[in-house]
Length: 209
Image (cartoon, rainbow, N blue to C red; front, side, top):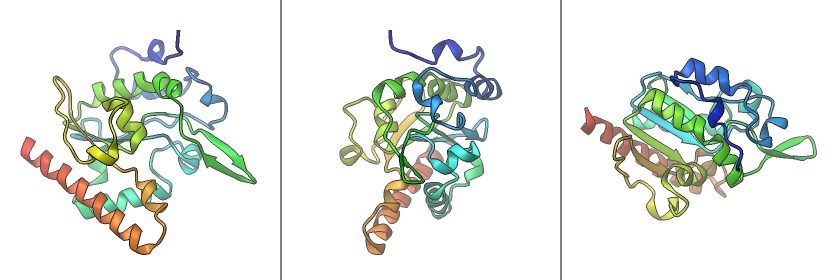
């Protein structure tokens, strides 16, 4: 049987209880290399939840999501889209940093399917506790975790998927992809497209009011 965090999830799944329980999670081997569990944070009754792939180097050190370079890109995009970060719940599909050493640097490695699956109960519990109206998947890992392995951000970016009894979901790129653009012009275009995606989300939330 595949390892899963499900037995660790408290009932009821309140955010403080989830955060405390996740701090000791060893459902997959990533805890051995990560400094700490990086759980989600933000408004407890947020209408909007943003889900990334996993914490990066800075997040692993500070124990908070989206506080590194990609987080700064996200902050700028949220401001441009008219969304207050304080009104959003931010989390990741995987709660530990997966990395490989390259000299003195820790380089991000994409989490594997079993690692994503082991961590999925935490994400499901966060959604159940926060009860957002819209969930935005940032990048392919989050999108495939929540929208299925056949979902492709390159083809289905910006499409809204209606949940039968849950939040509306959509997907866009991860802000780290903007940092990897080859030059300033490409980064500017990627940022404009990312902001446009977030503006559509803000408009959707307005329609749900």
